Amino acid sequence: MKKLLATLMAAAMALSLAACGSTSSSAAPESAPADAGSSSAATSEAASESTSAEPITMNVAYMPNYSSLVEVVTADKMGYFEEEGIDVNLVQFQDGPTIIAAMENGSIDVGYIGSGAHKLCINGQAKIFCFAHVGNGDRVMALKSHGIETAADLAGKTIGYSAGTSSEAILNKTLASAGLSMSDVNAMEMEASGIVSAMISGSLDACALWSPSTLAVEEELGDDVIELADNLSFADSSASVSSWICMSEYADANYDNLLRFTRALYKAKDYRADEANAEQISQWIAEECGLDFDTVYAQRGDAEWLTSQEMMDEVNDGTIESLYKSQQDGFIASGDVEAEVPVSDYVMFDLMKEAAA
Image (cartoon, rainbow, N blue to C red; front, side, top):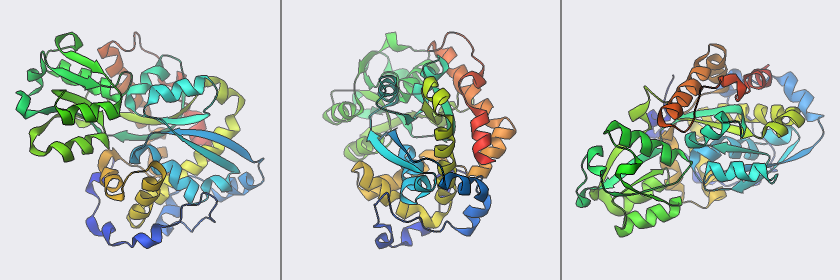
């Protein structure tokens, strides 16, 4: 895989926040940077066709963090959805399983999920129509003052986690790395906000969380916090892939809607790739999910970001499929998925390619 945003240069901080002020989703689209435009997988012919498409409204689920919002907010603010005839209604959720539940009851059309909820896609509950990124925003963290220095020290400790999410996934992997399982600890199922509060109060010995909640814990507890594992700790055995998903029934009935939505995401990937846009995008995200700018800006290194062309190169050479296969292997090893499923059964590679044509 290619470059990580963790290597972004600090020069982006020199940008004026005044240039980031526009928050209207109906604002006229600005011109994308020349290098982003040249790498965009969406062609001008496709854009021309989409302008005459029937206007649609799509209810879009997200989680309140940079990784979830970076593409969809950029596509909205830059007018890429408007170019495709799409009016997006952004709806905030706390985790992937609740997003999928909202899709099942029909209140949400498409949504972004982190790695942990992908087991539901593998098990047939939803389809992946666009690759988002490989993430590194999950952490297993513990309190040194509670006698924890290594993963092995988690035995018998009280650990907060969020079931069915990347929180549970990384906790299982961390415990397994020390020869432990959930039965060896006092695992407390909680919402992310509750985990943060319980860690700060000392009610928990350790936790499994994702960004920006991890940042909140570190900020409050400082040097007493020790990081036991992150996604990269298990990169060799299980990729931490995030994706855009929908129900199978929605995909069958609304394929063109997904195609248009994905074309807008591709343009957003390319706009995001220009370092000069980093502060502006972070400001948009902060305003959308009610976080402060510095918290959002600090999350830019939580994933490996690809341009649309880089993504398509990896779709075409099989790299993306191998990442989903690695992710599935991790779920099989942890017992969350019973048997191997062909990746193409739940990942819509043909749509990704068509959106780039």
